[in-house]
Image 1 (spheres, helix red, strand yellow):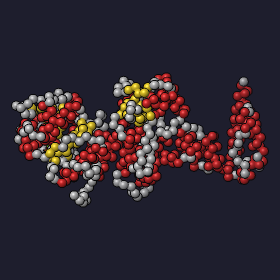
Image 2 (cartoon, each protein chain N blue to C red):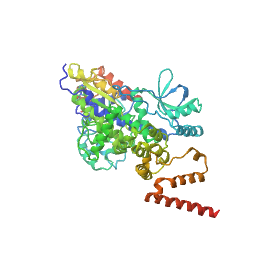
Image 3 (tube, each protein chain N blue to C red):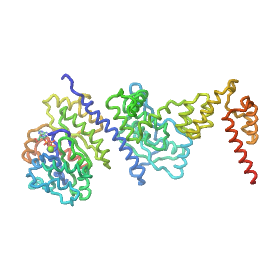
Image 4 (cartoon, rainbow over the protein chains, first blue to last red):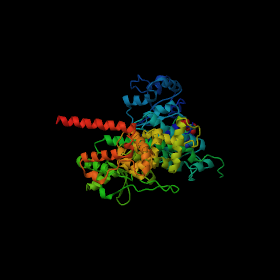
Length: 258
Length: 351
Ligand SMILES: Nc1ncnc2c1ncn2[C@@H]1O[C@H](COP(=O)(O)OP(=O)(O)O)[C@@H](O)[C@H]1O
Ligand SMILES: [Mg+2]
């Protein structure tokens, strides 16, 4: 999750999925964003019909036939995706009227469990109905933040919202905040350096530490990452030797331990 | 680089921090519930009783000190718990954190630990909580103390106030002022909002989590000002908080008598009793300097009741007030006495 557009959630999700699959975990990516960038980053084509998207799952009459698309099937096994896309704007409206709107995904997963080891839910940029849908279906939440003031401020508002929403939605057990991942760090930018430094007033890592929230390895800005995504591939396939892959590997390892 | 007007990240985090703390209470509640409902004892260890110590933290927060939550232990209640533990064992494990050298500090469960020690038990079932700072330990200790049902309203109020002090980083007097002004604002008595924007939320969050109304907390605040003998009486369960507050508001000269004679009356009865005593006190007969409250003499203690009643009756007859026939109130009470005597007579007749 995040509370700002373009922080790198979808990038994070596909690269994490790739690293998880590499260490033998089966993964299902669920695209909860109307922007559908998961489809693009996974190298897939936009699904032709709503019935082939997450919209289909979010129905009280859903019977367990998940519209699963294998991801990078010619490269590896174990990654599937349920895709989002424009239809989700309609879905969100429909959910407003459903009595269990916020819990439809949780219900679906409870009644018809997916067989994958890890489910990754890729949320939209700002807090909306899909955040409730995703939160109630999650065991853990990972927040991606760019190290700029605007995103950090919004990021803490998201954390605030999560703590409140867990109560309001009466989630038991409540999903845990797994940690925050700073993404797109540039050491040539003073604001990035400040916010990732150790001035107690100005430091994201320090603020997280004081709240006991885990900070994942910082991911640098890299044109390779942008290019990989644009080409529908994880960085690990696009440029295997790239340093950033290590960070994703480390995060994948951590998630397996959880 | 100059800081300019950039908002510090610490300020950005404020709302999330406060929501996180409310959430912690919620989780603690769930945890206490699940432990209470879990008889399997999973995760519980048998800890050595003699390696455990009560929580001894004072947070020095600009000179303000908050002590461990429980500073008072009612011996009767402690005995009852001891007996229950001796007979049925311990239902809820205690919470400790690891100190140095295999020692443990109690976070929750000092009473239970004391009982085990006094019963001569060598171990006690407990949970070890990892990585808990002094501050967190105190907060957790206060929170679980607030959540317990067996604590008295006074103890609970003390813990809630300490928790609020910790959260709001304020001294007790300021927390009180804040509570009063929030309460006034809530009941529409004032439009003043002489509190910081985040404070109402913090207070409300804590109260919600503890399932307490602002109004009831405010009503309990005067408990904190009770003179020590009344406070002890409340803590010892000899008088309920409502009656203690009524007694505290009555003239001080009446306190001890009220505590002895009126502690177990209902609120209405006690009110009436106080009014009567006050009227007696103000009555002209009291100008002779003698206490108007009937005093038991030493001998009366050891005498049979019939003698005590006779002695009392004699004193009443001889009083100056009664020489003139007393007043309507006295007449009414005499009617009651007459009624009671009649009942005794009737009863004796059946024997
Ligand atoms: N660390 C990074 N370095 C360079 N580009 C990045 C990085 N993370 C994300 N991007 C790029 O930023 C854009 C937004 O990322 P995306 O993952 O779609 O964000 P979100 O899903 O949070 O909206 C994409 O073009 C992506 O390739
Ligand atoms: Mg996205």
